[in-house]
Image 1 (cartoon, rainbow, N blue to C red):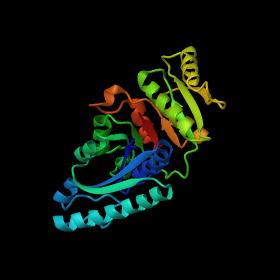
Image 2: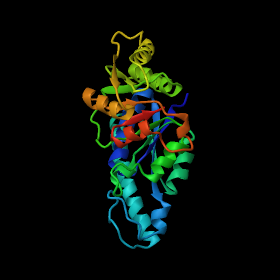
Image 3: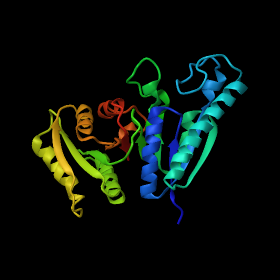
Image 4: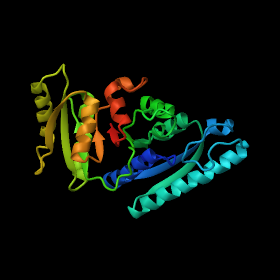
Length: 279
Protein backbone atom coordinates (compact mmCIF):
# COMPACT_ATOMS: atom_id res chain seq x y z
CA UNK A 1 0.00 0.00 0.00
CA UNK A 2 1.46 3.34 -1.10
CA UNK A 3 2.16 5.99 1.53
CA UNK A 4 -0.10 9.04 1.61
CA UNK A 5 1.38 12.26 0.26
CA UNK A 6 2.03 15.48 2.12
CA UNK A 7 2.51 18.60 0.00
CA UNK A 8 5.13 20.97 1.41
CA UNK A 9 4.93 24.40 -0.21
CA UNK A 10 8.12 26.40 0.31
CA UNK A 11 9.11 29.91 -0.74
CA UNK A 12 12.12 30.52 1.51
CA UNK A 13 10.17 32.54 4.08
CA UNK A 14 10.37 31.78 7.79
CA UNK A 15 6.67 30.81 8.12
CA UNK A 16 6.98 28.34 5.24
CA UNK A 17 10.16 26.88 6.77
CA UNK A 18 8.37 26.53 10.10
CA UNK A 19 5.47 24.66 8.50
CA UNK A 20 7.86 22.49 6.49
CA UNK A 21 9.86 21.42 9.54
CA UNK A 22 6.80 20.48 11.57
CA UNK A 23 5.47 18.77 8.46
CA UNK A 24 8.58 16.60 8.22
CA UNK A 25 8.15 15.43 11.82
CA UNK A 26 4.51 14.59 11.13
CA UNK A 27 5.45 12.82 7.90
CA UNK A 28 7.82 10.56 9.82
CA UNK A 29 5.20 9.83 12.49
CA UNK A 30 2.31 9.29 10.05
CA UNK A 31 4.29 7.59 7.26
CA UNK A 32 3.68 10.25 4.61
CA UNK A 33 5.63 10.64 1.40
CA UNK A 34 6.80 14.26 1.15
CA UNK A 35 6.32 16.19 -2.08
CA UNK A 36 8.02 19.60 -1.86
CA UNK A 37 7.15 22.38 -4.29
CA UNK A 38 8.66 25.79 -5.01
CA UNK A 39 6.74 28.04 -7.39
CA UNK A 40 8.30 30.69 -9.59
CA UNK A 41 5.43 33.16 -9.52
CA UNK A 42 4.31 34.32 -12.94
CA UNK A 43 3.24 37.76 -11.71
CA UNK A 44 6.76 38.57 -10.50
CA UNK A 45 8.28 37.49 -13.78
CA UNK A 46 5.82 39.41 -15.93
CA UNK A 47 6.40 42.65 -13.96
CA UNK A 48 10.17 43.24 -13.65
CA UNK A 49 9.52 46.17 -11.28
CA UNK A 50 7.65 43.99 -8.77
CA UNK A 51 8.89 44.48 -5.23
CA UNK A 52 10.68 41.23 -4.52
CA UNK A 53 10.25 39.40 -1.26
CA UNK A 54 13.06 39.87 1.27
CA UNK A 55 14.01 36.21 0.96
CA UNK A 56 14.62 36.37 -2.82
CA UNK A 57 18.13 37.31 -3.86
CA UNK A 58 18.54 40.59 -5.63
CA UNK A 59 15.71 42.64 -4.15
CA UNK A 60 13.96 45.17 -6.37
CA UNK A 61 15.09 45.90 -9.87
CA UNK A 62 14.17 45.74 -13.54
CA UNK A 63 15.29 42.52 -15.23
CA UNK A 64 14.36 40.56 -18.29
CA UNK A 65 11.91 37.71 -17.74
CA UNK A 66 14.70 35.24 -18.46
CA UNK A 67 16.94 36.75 -15.77
CA UNK A 68 14.09 36.80 -13.25
CA UNK A 69 13.20 33.16 -13.88
CA UNK A 70 16.85 32.12 -13.60
CA UNK A 71 17.23 33.97 -10.28
CA UNK A 72 14.04 32.47 -8.84
CA UNK A 73 14.84 28.96 -10.03
CA UNK A 74 18.32 29.11 -8.51
CA UNK A 75 16.92 30.34 -5.22
CA UNK A 76 14.13 27.78 -5.31
CA UNK A 77 16.58 24.94 -5.81
CA UNK A 78 18.60 26.16 -2.85
CA UNK A 79 15.47 26.15 -0.65
CA UNK A 80 14.47 22.68 -1.85
CA UNK A 81 17.97 21.28 -1.37
CA UNK A 82 17.95 22.39 2.27
CA UNK A 83 14.57 20.75 2.80
CA UNK A 84 15.73 17.54 1.11
CA UNK A 85 18.70 17.34 3.47
CA UNK A 86 16.40 17.76 6.48
CA UNK A 87 14.03 15.08 5.14
CA UNK A 88 16.85 12.64 4.46
CA UNK A 89 18.16 13.15 8.00
CA UNK A 90 14.76 11.90 9.19
CA UNK A 91 14.91 9.01 6.69
CA UNK A 92 11.88 10.28 4.80
CA UNK A 93 10.89 9.66 1.21
CA UNK A 94 10.86 13.03 -0.57
CA UNK A 95 10.46 14.31 -4.10
CA UNK A 96 10.62 17.93 -5.18
CA UNK A 97 9.78 20.19 -8.08
CA UNK A 98 10.08 23.79 -9.22
CA UNK A 99 6.95 24.95 -11.03
CA UNK A 100 6.05 28.15 -12.88
CA UNK A 101 2.69 29.90 -12.80
CA UNK A 102 0.16 31.37 -10.42
CA UNK A 103 0.77 30.29 -6.84
CA UNK A 104 -2.90 29.58 -6.10
CA UNK A 105 -3.82 27.42 -9.14
CA UNK A 106 -0.50 25.53 -9.14
CA UNK A 107 -0.74 24.66 -5.44
CA UNK A 108 -4.41 23.73 -5.71
CA UNK A 109 -3.58 21.27 -8.49
CA UNK A 110 -0.70 19.78 -6.51
CA UNK A 111 -2.82 19.48 -3.37
CA UNK A 112 -5.48 17.30 -4.97
CA UNK A 113 -3.66 14.06 -4.12
CA UNK A 114 -2.38 15.20 -0.72
CA UNK A 115 -3.55 14.22 2.76
CA UNK A 116 -1.95 17.32 4.31
CA UNK A 117 -0.62 20.62 2.92
CA UNK A 118 1.93 22.86 4.64
CA UNK A 119 1.89 26.60 3.96
CA UNK A 120 3.60 29.74 5.16
CA UNK A 121 1.82 33.02 5.83
CA UNK A 122 4.00 34.98 3.47
CA UNK A 123 2.07 38.16 4.23
CA UNK A 124 3.58 38.24 7.73
CA UNK A 125 6.92 39.20 6.21
CA UNK A 126 5.73 41.37 3.32
CA UNK A 127 4.26 44.84 3.10
CA UNK A 128 3.63 47.50 5.70
CA UNK A 129 0.91 45.65 7.64
CA UNK A 130 2.60 43.27 10.05
CA UNK A 131 -0.73 41.52 10.62
CA UNK A 132 -1.38 40.88 6.94
CA UNK A 133 -1.79 37.27 5.90
CA UNK A 134 -1.05 37.70 2.20
CA UNK A 135 -3.48 37.52 -0.73
CA UNK A 136 -2.19 34.17 -2.00
CA UNK A 137 -2.38 32.69 1.48
CA UNK A 138 -5.94 33.87 2.03
CA UNK A 139 -6.99 32.49 -1.36
CA UNK A 140 -5.45 29.10 -0.51
CA UNK A 141 -7.01 29.14 2.96
CA UNK A 142 -10.41 29.62 1.34
CA UNK A 143 -9.88 27.34 -1.65
CA UNK A 144 -8.09 24.24 -0.33
CA UNK A 145 -10.20 21.53 1.28
CA UNK A 146 -7.24 19.47 2.50
CA UNK A 147 -6.01 19.75 6.12
CA UNK A 148 -3.59 22.68 6.35
CA UNK A 149 -0.48 23.03 8.48
CA UNK A 150 0.36 26.74 8.65
CA UNK A 151 3.80 27.84 9.77
CA UNK A 152 4.49 30.39 12.46
CA UNK A 153 7.12 33.06 12.93
CA UNK A 154 9.64 30.89 14.77
CA UNK A 155 11.53 27.86 13.51
CA UNK A 156 10.60 24.97 15.82
CA UNK A 157 13.31 22.76 17.27
CA UNK A 158 10.96 19.95 18.22
CA UNK A 159 7.32 18.94 18.38
CA UNK A 160 6.76 18.12 22.03
CA UNK A 161 3.47 19.79 22.94
CA UNK A 162 0.24 20.62 21.12
CA UNK A 163 -2.73 22.77 22.13
CA UNK A 164 -6.24 21.76 21.06
CA UNK A 165 -8.78 24.59 21.03
CA UNK A 166 -12.15 22.85 21.42
CA UNK A 167 -15.68 24.24 21.30
CA UNK A 168 -17.81 21.17 20.60
CA UNK A 169 -18.39 22.04 16.92
CA UNK A 170 -18.01 19.64 14.00
CA UNK A 171 -14.88 21.54 12.94
CA UNK A 172 -13.43 21.17 16.45
CA UNK A 173 -14.25 17.43 16.35
CA UNK A 174 -12.04 17.13 13.26
CA UNK A 175 -9.22 18.86 15.16
CA UNK A 176 -9.82 16.53 18.11
CA UNK A 177 -9.44 13.53 15.80
CA UNK A 178 -6.07 14.85 14.66
CA UNK A 179 -4.97 15.44 18.25
CA UNK A 180 -5.80 11.84 19.16
CA UNK A 181 -4.01 10.61 16.04
CA UNK A 182 -0.87 12.60 16.79
CA UNK A 183 -0.86 11.50 20.43
CA UNK A 184 -0.84 7.87 19.28
CA UNK A 185 1.83 8.45 16.64
CA UNK A 186 4.26 10.60 18.63
CA UNK A 187 5.54 8.99 21.82
CA UNK A 188 5.61 11.41 24.72
CA UNK A 189 3.65 14.14 22.94
CA UNK A 190 2.01 16.47 25.47
CA UNK A 191 -1.57 17.49 24.75
CA UNK A 192 -3.41 20.45 26.30
CA UNK A 193 -7.10 21.13 25.70
CA UNK A 194 -8.55 24.64 25.93
CA UNK A 195 -12.20 25.66 26.02
CA UNK A 196 -12.83 29.40 25.86
CA UNK A 197 -15.79 30.94 27.64
CA UNK A 198 -16.99 33.93 25.72
CA UNK A 199 -19.24 36.56 27.23
CA UNK A 200 -22.19 34.82 25.60
CA UNK A 201 -21.31 31.34 26.93
CA UNK A 202 -21.32 29.81 30.40
CA UNK A 203 -18.71 27.93 32.40
CA UNK A 204 -20.96 24.86 32.35
CA UNK A 205 -20.90 24.78 28.56
CA UNK A 206 -17.11 25.11 28.48
CA UNK A 207 -16.69 22.35 31.06
CA UNK A 208 -18.97 20.09 29.01
CA UNK A 209 -16.76 20.70 25.98
CA UNK A 210 -13.67 19.73 27.96
CA UNK A 211 -15.23 16.49 29.19
CA UNK A 212 -16.30 15.65 25.66
CA UNK A 213 -12.77 16.16 24.35
CA UNK A 214 -11.17 14.29 27.25
CA UNK A 215 -13.36 11.26 26.61
CA UNK A 216 -11.54 10.76 23.29
CA UNK A 217 -8.33 10.15 25.25
CA UNK A 218 -9.87 7.78 27.81
CA UNK A 219 -7.69 4.88 26.66
CA UNK A 220 -4.44 6.73 27.35
CA UNK A 221 -2.56 6.38 30.63
CA UNK A 222 -1.48 10.04 30.62
CA UNK A 223 -4.61 12.17 30.05
CA UNK A 224 -4.27 15.65 28.58
CA UNK A 225 -4.35 18.78 30.71
CA UNK A 226 -7.75 20.45 30.20
CA UNK A 227 -8.61 24.01 31.21
CA UNK A 228 -10.80 26.99 30.40
CA UNK A 229 -10.08 30.64 29.67
CA UNK A 230 -12.58 33.47 29.50
CA UNK A 231 -12.40 36.20 26.87
CA UNK A 232 -12.00 36.64 23.13
CA UNK A 233 -11.20 33.17 21.71
CA UNK A 234 -8.36 34.16 19.38
CA UNK A 235 -6.56 36.08 22.10
CA UNK A 236 -7.05 33.33 24.67
CA UNK A 237 -5.86 30.58 22.33
CA UNK A 238 -2.62 32.48 21.73
CA UNK A 239 -2.22 33.23 25.43
CA UNK A 240 -2.67 29.55 26.31
CA UNK A 241 -0.18 28.47 23.64
CA UNK A 242 2.43 30.85 25.05
CA UNK A 243 1.72 29.90 28.66
CA UNK A 244 2.03 26.17 28.03
CA UNK A 245 4.86 26.27 25.51
CA UNK A 246 2.82 24.79 22.67
CA UNK A 247 4.66 23.92 19.47
CA UNK A 248 1.46 23.56 17.44
CA UNK A 249 -2.15 24.75 17.80
CA UNK A 250 -4.96 22.52 16.55
CA UNK A 251 -8.30 24.21 15.98
CA UNK A 252 -11.45 23.83 13.94
CA UNK A 253 -11.65 25.19 10.42
CA UNK A 254 -15.10 26.72 9.87
CA UNK A 255 -16.86 25.61 6.71
CA UNK A 256 -17.59 29.24 5.85
CA UNK A 257 -13.90 29.80 5.24
CA UNK A 258 -14.21 27.86 1.98
CA UNK A 259 -15.02 30.66 -0.44
CA UNK A 260 -14.61 33.51 2.05
CA UNK A 261 -12.18 35.25 4.37
CA UNK A 262 -11.28 33.66 7.71
CA UNK A 263 -13.44 34.62 10.69
CA UNK A 264 -12.27 36.84 13.51
CA UNK A 265 -11.02 34.05 15.80
CA UNK A 266 -9.00 32.26 13.14
CA UNK A 267 -7.62 35.50 11.72
CA UNK A 268 -6.46 36.62 15.15
CA UNK A 269 -4.77 33.28 15.82
CA UNK A 270 -3.06 33.30 12.43
CA UNK A 271 -1.80 36.84 12.98
CA UNK A 272 -0.20 35.68 16.21
CA UNK A 273 2.54 33.83 14.36
CA UNK A 274 2.07 30.41 16.00
CA UNK A 275 2.07 27.20 13.95
CA UNK A 276 -1.53 26.06 13.39
CA UNK A 277 -3.07 22.83 12.08
CA UNK A 278 -6.52 23.19 10.52
CA UNK A 279 -8.13 19.85 9.57
